[in-house]
Length: 178
Image (cartoon, rainbow, N blue to C red; front, side, top):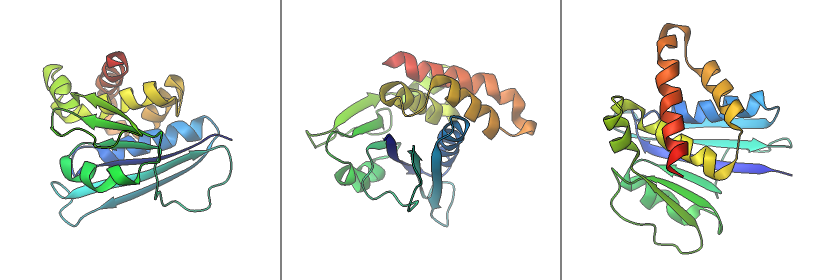
């Protein structure tokens, strides 16, 4: 049985809920059971935001992730809040452009990806979330690259169809870091 319990967290406006949706749709395309549960503060942009994503080969009892095996964080407060909850042997993906501290635990794998700097250098500073998501998918195999692309195509609305290629480029950049 394969199951991934994922928390994606940071500030509102960083595209975290979008990243979670892409993963959820990728899981759906691959025929897995899934759950996507967003959570954000009243400020929306600039306030805290996170989402729980569960991808499983069996039915999911609860959409709440208390002990993720994968954590993706894009701000220091989120790393502070969720680091302790990651299961031993879990993986933590950190936007090292925005978070200067290192993971304190030694029983997890930490990936320091300068996602915001990479996205800025590639001319799409608002897509750092996709760089980090690309690295996450490459390192965890929680979904296939094909599934990820299919999920991305489902989540990008028709009015923003012109954003598909740049999102693909950012995902690939994240994958290529590893």
